[in-house]
Length: 125
Image (cartoon, rainbow, N blue to C red):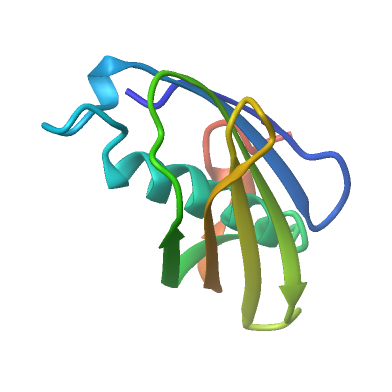
């Protein structure tokens, strides 16, 4: 349902591209809040997890600020690690429309799990 493309340009940074269509709309004809959350959480998560080479990170808290209505078209979620290195990391993300306008912003905390990355599909070497 959320087919997207992920790029990790540098440690602590993530970019996710996603195309919104009518399947993602709520009853009033715009993207449902779940789309905003999914994109922002994933971008912040990958930015944080790119700083941790051995285990999977878990979202423990996430705040959203929805500022613009989104209809059909491309979105870019940009995530950036903010602080933390041991147990809990903080990362933020921005969601941009095709014109480069910010439509939403998020910030979350991510905690180390006991799940080795190497044990997960897509992470094993």
